[in-house]
Length: 136
Image 1 (cartoon, rainbow, N blue to C red):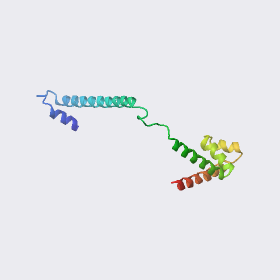
Image 2: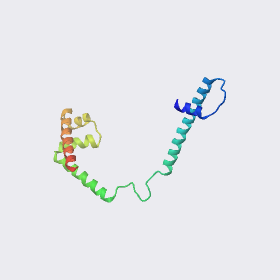
Image 3: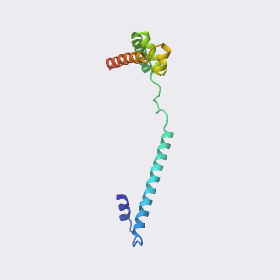
Image 4: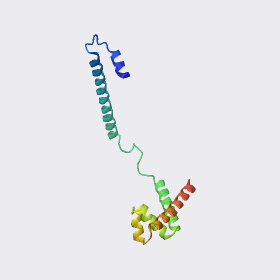
């Protein structure tokens, strides 16, 4: 409403035969202007993003060799931690969390109850949480 008021007071329309119709028409045009402005801004942003997509000059999206080595060492440390928890815990964790098998499927494949699978996963999660705290 404030924008409509500002638009009306900024113009000098002279005598208006139907003030209510004039008010509604002003509001309608204001909404059309706003819609066009938002649409144009979206198109402009999309075009800018398409032109500037990709890596900035001189910067690669690939991790550096140092980061790759650090990530490989971290992964090896986590796998060793899981293996240290026991073969069954490691197998259940890998099958469920890495391969994405549902807990029921893991239980059926390994001949275990669902509650056993859940308990073994809790052991793995607890060990990973403790490892994460140590690594901070």
